[in-house]
Length: 183
Image (cartoon, rainbow, N blue to C red; front, side, top):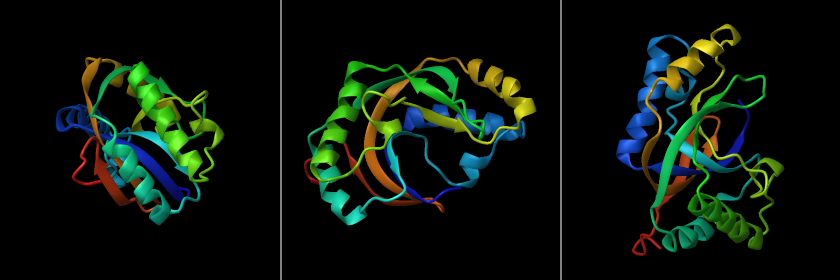
């Protein structure tokens, strides 16, 4: 796994448990255990970069999160990226609220000189919640069918925003959306 940082959006406990259920089903079937082994948390990646400055970002993200409210989310479909690592994900419905949240975060980061990579720019970002990585090619169809059968859509809220460092995975900080007391 590569090295870098990611800004992630964490879910409320009920929605997080729905994603963990998918991870566990795939692990029990010995299809994919990587996210569990990494001790990752279910999330939507808002930005990923090989180099970010955590101390500089802490105040930016703290101020940004204090001005936001928990964000309604619906994980509505199963998808895959056309890449060699055979990643599967739940895709949230790209609501105006989610897209504006992401766009406003990118603007706040750009004002601080953070370069937004091509994959995470508002006009090209594909919101996703990873459910499996490095699925054996001969088991992709099986994994896809298992995920499709998990009764989507599931709805809940994004509650926290965090900066994580990888690899190994380590949360640098996290803030609750709308929590002015933390800001």
